[in-house]
Image (tube, rainbow, N blue to C red):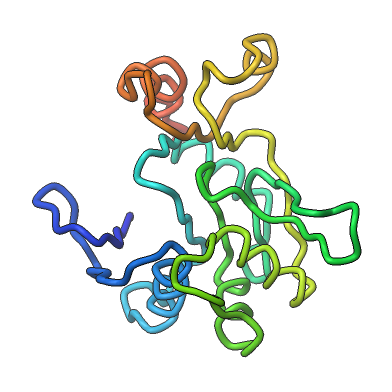
Length: 192
């Protein structure tokens, strides 16, 4: 079951929480707070935060998440680093590729009192990275999440994997990307 958080009303999706805040960081932290407060989400183990121009394979994501324990604080996605060659550097999950957090990770982020946005428009993925580092929650890199479009990657590399996400719709047809990379996985059923 998917729940959507948005700053725009939609007749296509059930918007669980209508965000009116400006700025990525403020929106993301508001979503994390709402996750803990919303009764309909209390039984959910995993949360995926992604951009509106991210294409994702839920089938492949669910398969990957089966390898992790949601009762542990898990932060998963495409890991980048900022200033990692210095003592003040940190890793973070790229928001465009999709940020996966276990309920335990969300609880730690929100209840720790150590995580907040310096400004509403601070980069949410980088602020979450600093927060996770301060909480000693490791960021698990997965090469199956992609911050960019399929055309931005070496075709031989992509041929060796089953991608989970691609980001950005610039100069591509997102429906074609879905059909090429994800439709076959979505048709697979494993009920037998």
